[in-house]
Image 1 (cartoon, rainbow, N blue to C red):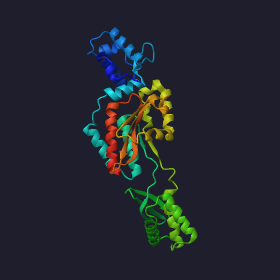
Image 2 (image 1 turned 180 degrees about the vertical axis):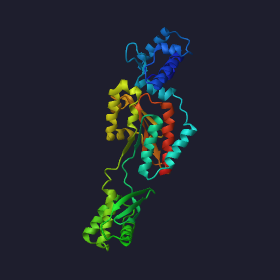
Image 3 (image 1 turned 90 degrees about the horizontal axis):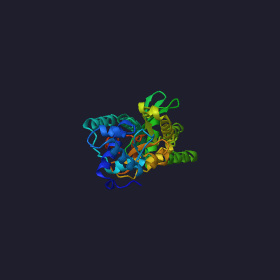
Image 4 (image 1 turned 60 degrees about the vertical axis):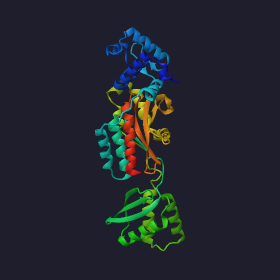
Length: 346
């Protein structure tokens, strides 16, 4: 457990801050000569080395090699993030970029993918959006003819979300059959989940308890199946920007980066980590070995829940990358993006 920051002397706090900020900026250990040369300490390299040794004994710093300088441990980063970091706000330009990118969204799935890509670009890490499994309930369903043999299936959920799917039609289907099938689904199955709706319509069709003709019955099944069949395959975790993790500084640490990329492939495991952020009031930070999943890769996650207009959590978004993420810049950016996304799709 890290000591309270107030237990550190003013000199130790100043040196600790300089080491952490230097490491977060460069990704490299910081040596005593570098600290002495930065000015403002009025201490000799020998005095600085003495303080560095003290901080290392407290478990706040580590030395990867004998003469390589010091870098913060997971415990040290946690102390810095919780007690010393000064968090600002996204710049007006960053705020406008986020609003504009989300404003130009299309369907919900596209908005979520755009959010993930945006977070990756702004952070230099990988952007992640976690969507808890939640099947929509039907409010209205329409089949709109597009061309011979093709229609657009439009589903409006009780939460107001709209989803579209392309649907192949059997020969001879006209607008009258499409309208009958649409009205049947909307009138008889409203308020049910997709799985519930498909199960009920199949029961009714099997028992002949419907006045629909054969063509309309086929359309009802096709229209519902185009969603229900992919319900289990709906993405619960969207990850974009993995390639950004392979920057110039990654060359000297390829084993860690490979492990991180392997972690990203295990979407279920990362989804479980993000699930812990759903109940948070604000942004949460998971650092390195604090979480079993990232113990080997030494990675960090900055995550924030996004909410609908009623304040209900509908998902989690954030960034993942090495522990040298710029926490002070990214924490408010992730929080602002979460609030912006919630306003648009909530």
